[in-house]
Image 1 (cartoon, rainbow, N blue to C red):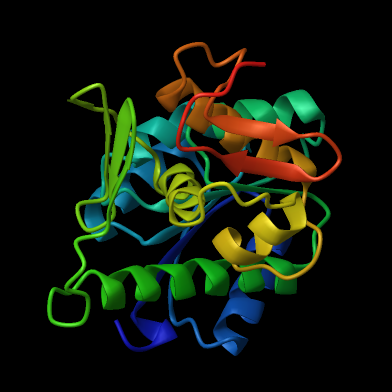
Image 2 (cartoon, rainbow, N blue to C red):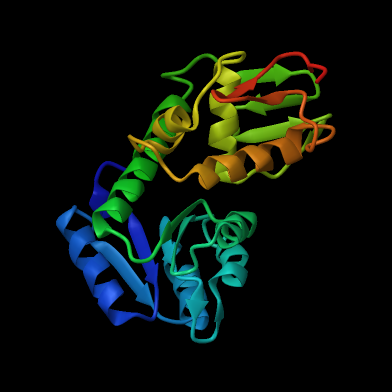
Length: 244
């Protein structure tokens, strides 16, 4: 894709004022394929019909929960799902990521921040496309770390010989660590390098994604030996398991 207007964005929210505000800002930023749904049923029908690339999803909808809807929407084109919700507690954020969300913004929010996060995601998608072509990247991009292997070109995580499902944003974070083993990255650096957003982001976003990586690559996620926390500094991925 070469233009922002090529990307389909679905806004799933029953608050008319929020929908109107987002439509206005996103159009001004160059997005033209905007779709709207106000219920879970409408969102599913829209996803089947249009397979949007980005979904802005409210959690509290008239006919159900956006959290439960999230996994169903993933069946149609595996969209990038960004929760927009008034539910702002740490538990709510954790549940959002646990149910398959890629990002989480609490209401009230600045619509320009939503546009910035969408643009950051698109830059990431375009980067993946440009680096996955054999003509431009002869290196297959395979990273082996003992019990697990990451194949960049195939977008695949293999743990002890078996493929393990990995949401796109979790995979991108793991891939970043694989490319720079042994290097400590702060949460701010990870937000910048992986999410494409400058400045300090929501701490819980990185923490949840770190936990989701550990659940996939560690023998004991509660006692990690590969993806380590460096107290006061950040996180690093090591080649060999470390005793702690």
